Amino acid sequence: MSTSVRVRTVRRSAGVVAAAIAATLVLATPASAHVEVGSEGARALAENVTLNFDAATESDAAGITKLEVFLPKGITPADVTYGKGPAGWKLAPTDKGFTVSGPPVAVGEDVTYSVVVRQLPDAKSLVFKTLQTYDDGRVDRWIELGESSGGGHGHSAPVLKLQAAAPGAEPVAPTPSASPTPSASPTSAAPSPSAPPATETADAKPTASDRATAAAEEDGSSPALPIGIAVAVLALVGGGLWWFLKSRRTGTA
Image 1 (cartoon, rainbow, N blue to C red):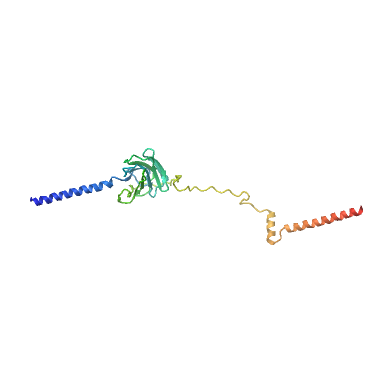
Image 2: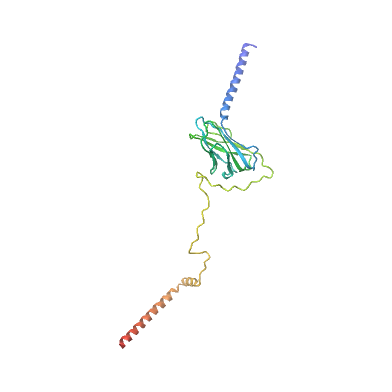
């Protein structure tokens, strides 16, 4: 083999090795960060299923304090209960999902937690969009569908693939809505019914005098008019009689 051929071969080999190293470095960096969800043997319409979430940190200066999850269609906040997670962390329902939060974890530490879902919907896959908050205010948005765009603030949402529903599996009755947290929408509890008026009842029937009065008012002859005339006549007659008797006593005297 000539010298020129050996040089070209060495150069070609070096180029291939360099390209492979560069590709490895490019692919390794974004792949180290993620939020994932998993559940062994998860099936559509399965009940009381434990979902395990793993949220990788992307900050070398702050600790994770909260993860907000937006539930997919078919799962309500009332269907989710807390499993386990970092010390001191708790679950709180929101109007669109739930949050798990607590004291900041150590800088550089990932967060692993689990929840139990009452029943999974009849679907092939479920997307759990997640916002990841750090104690310095940074928020990583794991909300994209498809490949991650990278950059630390726009990443692929965690997706759970489901097996087909077991034979005979059926949807269960909906879970009653849980009381919202202070940050959630106001309660939708029905207001208490108003008390009925104390002076009137719905089944009250008119008396005979009521009917007579109503009839007289309709034809323009209210019973109050004859009564008033009778009273006036009696007053005049009584006054005249009194005057007559007084005059006789005076004349006699």
